[in-house]
Length: 179
Image (cartoon, rainbow, N blue to C red; front, top):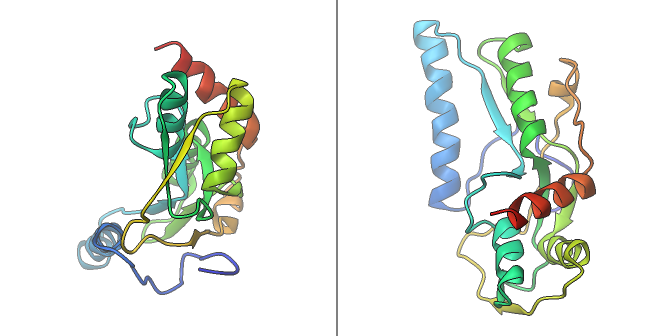
């Protein structure tokens, strides 16, 4: 999406097999609610980061490779944008949906921290007080230029993020420095 944000009722238009698998899992889960009356709630989360994240993802990979003085690969020109949420806020959001959400509904989870990949990398460099070497690599096929979701429906359940992005990023850098 170039402008605005996706809401829960927007038509899904996956751009890759990976995104198609995520979209289809939501539809399969909801079909069990409609067909068998199972208590099903679907959450769709923006980019999650924090402790224990798989090390090949952008944020931990940048931190680890910067500590090790290795090149940091960045897809395309680094301008792809994502909305980021700290893992602790994501967990609390999921718990809110489980305890206050309505069966058969979809809830977007977002902290409204929209940043480009190059902005993320530069913020990590600033926190670490160490500017690493970026290596621009070919973008992935079907890689979305921008991904943004609207979480107004979740906010109405009483959830709100507790961590601002900068604070959460510092916590992530500190945590990764301990391993």
